[in-house]
Length: 124
Image (cartoon, rainbow, N blue to C red; front, side, top):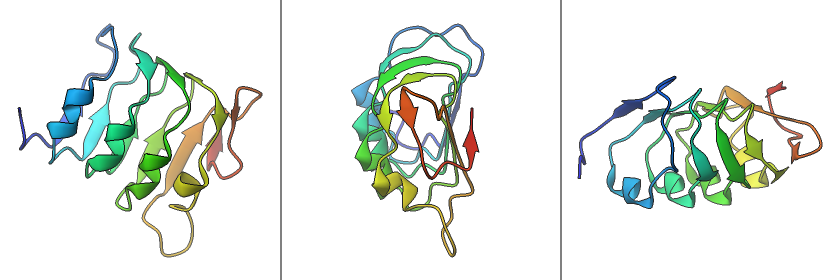
């Protein structure tokens, strides 16, 4: 496994499939950018075990709920989950990463019927 990999950017590459659980081994990954790809499946909770600072998964076909484990990422600065198939409510654990003295600057999501996000800084 690529344990020293820090940056993974596959924007607009027509990638298919889902984010593999094996990525839990990417212990140095701080940036995950896979926007504008037809990737499917849920947003894996294992992402909450990585030292991520940036997550960009907008305009994908990811489904399910935002895992509460993302709220454990106290170094998370930017999250872009708009134009996805995510449903449910943004977990309070993720919302708690925003605010005075916190690192997170941007939390973007679809804030409509399927996805409720009371704390998002950008709603689509």
